[in-house]
Image (cartoon, rainbow, N blue to C red):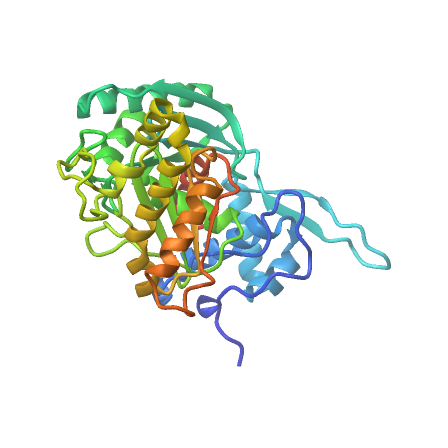
Length: 395
């Protein structure tokens, strides 16, 4: 007896190779939720779009084989996607021998655009109009407000978003935003001292002002999605985003880890060391964020260029002090750094690796790698993943 469509799950995709528009093997984030019959159609829609997004153009028969869904189900879904302008027929596959050549379908990658906004920069907010493949089409910036006034931060965000909407040339699938601080799953910024927001409903308010779907997440949680979906990472890693603040995003067992308070990865306000240290924006002394944020490191090096390596070694060591318990508790494989490469290079990384090994069980965590991300615009691309996931079920 064949398995019903509502219980089908993704299979491996290795028979077509990766076409120009594909990102490679499927990297769908795992879900613990069981697919119930009433949710089956939504699950199947996401499965088909996920397959096309990562594997590229294929025939309806290919889709049936790859997803395990019946050809009738595939034909119905593809017809629905074509009517909605999400999928297009792009021609026929060349074949040898008798028979009608199959028609290839693919996501209409040029038919819609996504807006991504990164609010984590030290001097400006950055945004981009992007294709569904995460490529930047248009880029805009606005100056970051000098003070921590929440109204000013929202006004700057709204102005940037409206400028990007005006710059778009295709229907918009949605707006994704990476913001510093603790962000609830409904897009309420519970706490962001760097932006002056506390319990601020950024997602709903901006959605009303723009009349568009908006998804807001912590900037490091956005970045870790980009690294997972577009990068080369394994199923258990931490991405540390170093900018005006310091935060981390976590993937464990191919699932994003958010925590019961939506504060997983909030390592920036962990005090590292017992020697005091610079005053943090949160009011404490010696937080990791206060030690290793880009503004402080840059100013310290400019003040004493001869001490550059010592400053970066100290930053790397303090970062490792903060993350060693996390690495050990979650048995992570890799640590990925995102930030200015001129600061987060070999000097900082070597010090971090040495300190991490000294503070974890010898012989167990010696192979944990710390490296810089290879991705540009990682928060913007993560914002695109958020929209793709929220609107199409693609990750």
